[in-house]
Length: 307
Image 1 (spheres, rainbow, N blue to C red):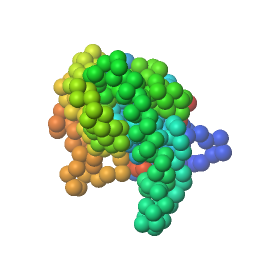
Image 2 (image 1 turned 135 degrees about the vertical axis):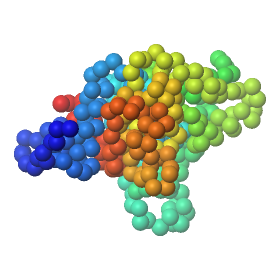
Image 3 (image 1 turned 135 degrees about the horizontal axis):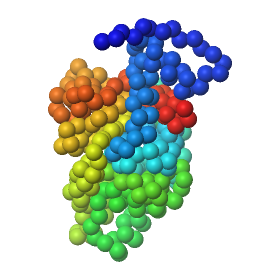
Image 4 (image 1 turned 180 degrees about the horizontal axis):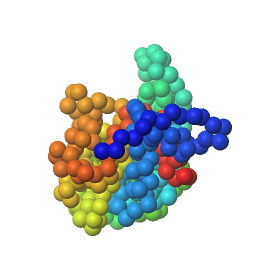
């Protein structure tokens, strides 16, 4: 193997996120080089005829990173999205109200008394979350139930996006561009609770999660090559790589995570572990970038989109 020399980074006034990432790719170590590799892999993913999968957890939708996710979907950079129920919750809540900058160190007992939920260092007024989501979802479900009694999670996500009708919403652009948003853990959140609550008075109402599984099966078998950007971990990460194994694994995989592998968790499992399961091809292009997505993604996606 031809060894590449480590190159020093020289910062210049004219540097852009793209030029910095290129320099980081040649810097030899450590996570900076991984970000540079991730840039190259995502550029190839976006430029080629891969089936493109995006996965992310709910928490980032509570932050300004929601704008980056929305932009990727608006620009049709991915063909299918897999996320968690909380992502729907936060997208609805922020489309009709506001979240606020807070602090990790606030007294949570006092916050509870004031009716403020804390998500890391983001403050969410109670009335901007549960009651708002209940009102919007019950109105939506009543309307949709008059048309059909059974739906899937990706169709529900489109219905929510149509209802939101706000360009800041990632669900709105998924609906507009007909990009499926799958939620394998649909009951685990405020929207999921509203589905259960609605069913108490509409016993024939059903969410057919197997329709979602048929969708992703059809998707992976309709593409010769598969690639994914996997933000964070959990069920959304696993669902993408689980299905990819049935096509012998992803050709391109970029993980962005703050989790580590030493506890054996799926969230911390690196790309190389997925190779042993057949979820990433043995000679595929893969990298794990260790870092907070709210730091990594704005630079990485800017570099990909505007290089």
